[in-house]
Length: 296
Image 1 (cartoon, rainbow, N blue to C red):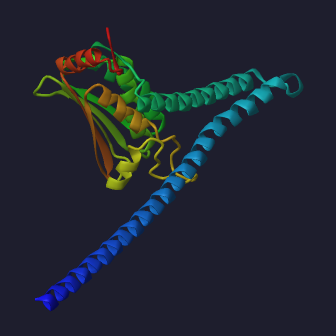
Image 2 (image 1 turned 180 degrees about the horizontal axis):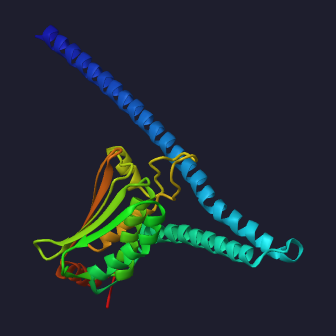
């Protein structure tokens, strides 16, 4: 019995040592995998940061160079003897560049406020019909100049919704603007709206543009993400239009979905709830003291 007890003790000791070493091996393996994953994430973060800095530098410098260059020419009017048409053209170029620069700065400020939770909606009952009509009208001339057909279709009477008209217009402007930007000449864009069964509304922005795969959709929805991050990409942009639109729709208790296929086009579907849903969220946020929706 004594020798048996000693044998059992040795067996237990060996099993304990084996379990300890096995545990250490598993821990080392998991640590190595975590380090590799962290390394990949750091490399990806550095790549995204580098692309962001390069793209934002380009987005800011291009209009600034235009403003500085043409304002210098205007300042030398006495020596260069500019014609009246030259002055008008230079002033228009400076105005357009300043407008682009302001839009970039506003996008950066908007996404910063949204991410910090300091973005407030001025919610009231509004006409979605009027919001969409204004958006389409503002892009009609741009689409024609780009050689695109822009169509607007909707039911005779869309339901009234509760929300911030200015912010919803900003969201749909971004969606229509993206469709125009990424559709080649000869293509078409359709903006459709209809009433949902629950009393809410659905808006679809469909184009025949370059399209995206699933990974590119994920990147496009990431703030500052560029599906094509190279300086030679086909279209300029900060990569903020779609994330801002998505965030604004979510603030309205809505949902934004994207269906797209490479080289075939993209459809963005926005679902907005009936007025009582946003009113409930608004009242609840006010009760809990949460920011996000101002009552009007």
